[in-house]
Image (cartoon, rainbow, N blue to C red; front, top):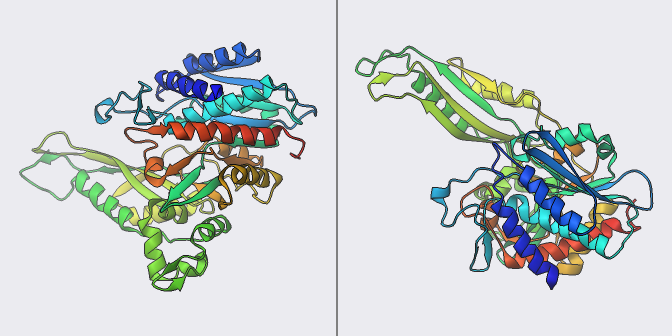
Length: 437
Ligand SMILES: [Zn+2]
């Protein structure tokens, strides 16, 4: 299978282009993709938003005008600390059946599988019903101002898309049971810094106005709060599809709403990182700064929190609670006030059914369920303006592999490349067919 070998070597080369964001420097990645498209006789345009920060777009013309379908990906990756890795994070090494590298899962392999599925349509001379657009953006990991936001301004037609496919869901294997997560919504980013001021002084004479102590007390109160577990139609459908029929202590899963009232089921939800994160607001302390010398009381210190809110939560309600928990000795500053409030994409659609058919034809009769992505993706830009947007890459990951996404030794198996390529081709064929609206 030639395209599979191509996919493996292209993904390895793509990983070797260091697009750590910040600073990004994704132009090299855009040029790399442009070369592949040009070799296939496809026209591609590079749109640079800033020096070295570039996006790339290519198109296969459809029979009908307007409302294109977009295969979306991002070319940047989060930083990797080389000393923590067992291989070079930008080496693209293959070891024990896996390709290792920053971006293997998030999301260079998916970009290449989507690209090759797109190229495959062109090679076969398929004329899709609607224009199919391949779009790879920069800057996704730091908010998308140079990437998706820039491209929506530059090419307003993108706002008129009928459907967008990108990252956010996959096939998950847990206890020998596989299900598909097709993401139709995502949690909302709500990051903030807690700052304290105090009085400097000598460590030998505590005076009760220590900035570090104020930060620790406020942070402790924020982190001790148990945000309520909440059922939504999407999480009810998702967890119902996985847990329906399952028993705990002889009792059958009673549906999410009732399960949330039962201590045994609540324990199951809270002890699984994914279930916990899709059922409540989460608040994670990620950066602590304060003090430089062992005998000096610092006059300033700060704690930075990465919070992710349930789609139905409002930033205002959330921050009211955070301020109340933090108390009067500290101030709270939000990071990034320009925050979107995207509604979920519908999942009783031709697109969801089409994706489900592709999955069941490849994987058999497994549950294909709507999902809420815990991270933020470029899809929020489309959901914000009402364009149906799903996050799905047809590869089977264990929960542990999934959790490596922004961590050390990120990797994707060669078997995943095989299924990702086959699955993307199947989905892109469906999107090119006459059955899309
Ligand atoms: Zn990503």
